[in-house]
Length: 252
Image 1 (tube, helix red, strand yellow):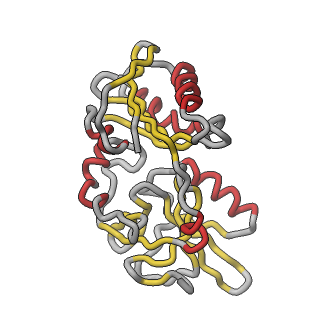
Image 2 (cartoon, rainbow, N blue to C red; image 1 turned 30 degrees about the vertical axis):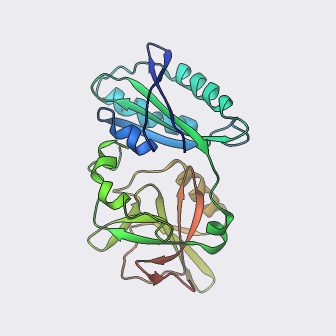
Image 3 (spheres, rainbow, N blue to C red; image 1 turned 180 degrees about the vertical axis):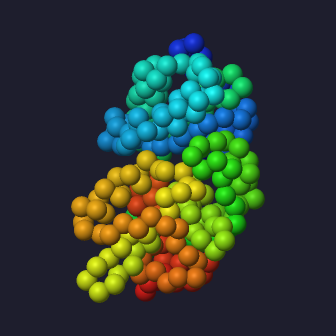
């Protein structure tokens, strides 16, 4: 899918020539930095949790005393303009703030919604013993670090779950949850430490509480049996999982 790339410097947006085949390839061509990825909603007019997405850039930059090349207000305005240019399609955007200079880059492509079949039938996932260096920060170094794992994604493998010591922490590009039913009570179990706290995750946990589920913050064990499992991300929403490493979840 075609990608357009831009550099936002001194509050001015400049188009870049790129032959990158994906947002990951475009990101890997830049200096190390922080990034966030999201899709638009409602005909390009809304982004779920945009403030939280922008914090993924500006907060770590502030901790490093790094001055971004554009302020948050300008970045919001440029995101809105680019999304409008993609209408009637929704847009998928990646924002990158480089650590060496504080420059902000934007990659954008038309967003094609996932087929309804993945939400109706669920997906198959596998696990890998790989973890982020600093789970609090969405760093571009993880994209490079996980290149071998990303090559395993195909029509039969929707996501790769990151594990350590037999515990499942998160997906490579998503958050992970399981549900267990005990009598009349149901518990939602998800890691709280050692993960990137996703934007969609916050909304899901709020809805789970409102639905009366008990929330347990712990990394599920690979050796456990789950009644249900699912993942969430800004671009994919809530996706049910039917198998992990070819082991069925619940009734599959």
